[in-house]
Length: 239
Image 1 (cartoon, rainbow, N blue to C red):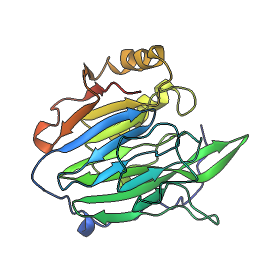
Image 2 (spheres, rainbow, N blue to C red):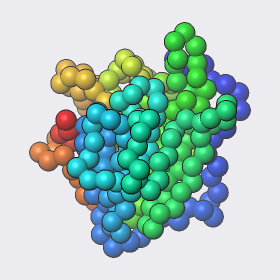
Image 3 (tube, rainbow, N blue to C red):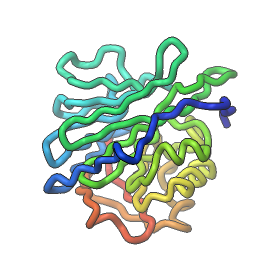
Image 4 (cartoon, rainbow, N blue to C red):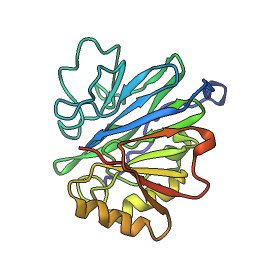
């Protein structure tokens, strides 16, 4: 586990700012691979998470988010055509802070810490929250520790969690299960696993308490009306 620093600065939340867009149509979520997803809003805003040089979407996104635990989660040379590049780590010792509204999408971040050698890099990772068409999607990034009450309050209500389930480079298996229980979202989509064995191990454990579903295509259409009524893990095939 990574030691928590007192008074970690989190993304500010103001209830008056929670404007969940109700644009017509569902959110289109595609698993590209590793920790990268393509999120497409009803208004056509495109976002790629953990944008990097190795696994990319087949289109140029308007927005990208990045984390820098490893170079498979960021790039030093994002395409200049990308309108918004949101880095999950801060500069000059300050945590990253993002609150960005683009048409029908609101994006914010909640910083967390990462292991760095034998020490801790405070606020070196961010969980990004995407609020679009009434659905709140949280990408946990390269999460290295359990979440505090402050983290959970900053996240707010989450409908879909994109969770790293490798069980080693991020959190161990039981640690990730504890995180997912604390967030308590109705839908979990696994990412960041390095083998079928690693994925199946996670599914076997979470399947004791969640319903497990496997999609045949790498995408899912999300809306408030189609969110599962019971806690569900949905596996999307990716590369």
